[in-house]
Image (cartoon, rainbow, N blue to C red; front, side):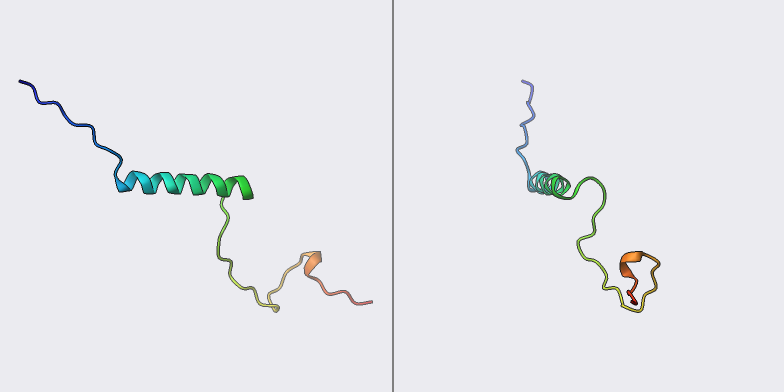
Length: 59
């Protein structure tokens, strides 16, 4: 008699992988493709930048 291998049911690791995949897809739908940091570093007012939107207006 040959022994048959039993099919393994989804383990907790498979569940975690599926949850991660689902949350990643949902994030991409909201924010678009690519990397988006969830926690941004606070930037000091004294940090120099050349962008027009950060320059102070003097009239």
